[in-house]
Amino acid sequence: MYSKEELSAIIEEYIHALPFPEEPDTLYEPIVYSLGKGGKRLRPLLAMMACNIFSDDVACALPCAAAVEVFHNFTLLHDDIMDNAAVRRGKPAVHRKWGVNSAILSGDAMMIYSYRLLEQADPAILPRIFRIFNDTSLKVCEGQQYDMDFEALERVPMEDYLHMISLKTAVLLAGAAVIGAVCGGASQEDCDRIYTFATELGMAFQIRDDILDSYGTQDSLGKKIGGDITEGKKTFLTTAAMEIADEDTRRKLGGLMHNREMIADEKVARVLAIYDSLGVREQAETAVERYTARATEALAALSVSGGRREPMERLALELTKRLS
Image 1 (cartoon, rainbow, N blue to C red):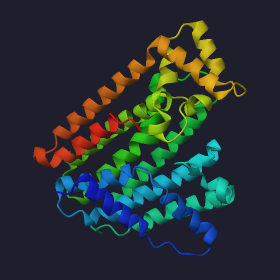
Image 2 (cartoon, helix red, strand yellow):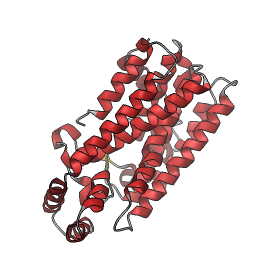
Image 3 (cartoon, rainbow, N blue to C red):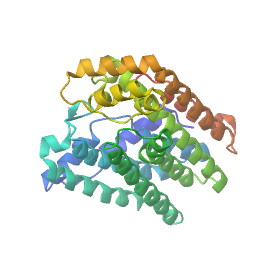
Image 4 (spheres, one colour):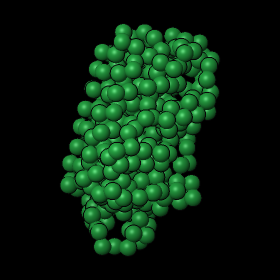
């Protein structure tokens, strides 16, 4: 079996060598720029690791893994436009560097290019790969729409927030993993288990992200702490706080989250004080542990030896315990 580091190197080399045309440069340079800015490459890694659980030949999954990564980065291009985000992974966002129109069109081209990569899959499984990818992609769009709809709401039920992140974040991890499993020849039962594993992992991953945005460190994250608070975004922490706070505290928190005039550091400090008084960080940590346990349980049910599951088990713990 391959180590995580070996698979990461294979993925990075493949993505770096993708043969994008040079002209028009205003279409393709933003694509190369966005794919070259790093990131965790988590989705293609899940695809490759899932394939490797069931097969020693991972080359068959590589184009599909890259397709998921190209699609993911396409969504980030468009997300940054919708959020008017200035920075992505420590560098200027594509729409700030090339303009909104170029960012939209480059994102569109990336989505189309994803299908070119998927076409390289084994013809025997290609229709199934396309179905998984299409279902996954549409759900990601649904999740993004829910996220935008929530911005106008004072309060979102926890059930609705969890449904949103299951679509916006978890489903693409699950889609990537099950595509890899299909490439590796997994049975339908094991594909279902892999899908459950990656979905639960994705939920834990996003809630950990929410925690780190408020309680991480700038050195470890590479960005200023409290960005979600500053921008008034709905997270697990704000959703939990709104559910358990009394009316007065809820009103204060809502006023802070919608205040665009307050100095960012002061706003973050006040919101964190409310979080701390309500114990929502502990509630979020408990949720991460719960979803991680479910993920581990699904992985343990796979019809393969424990040794073949071990790299994925380590990755799951690494992601849910991470500090950045």
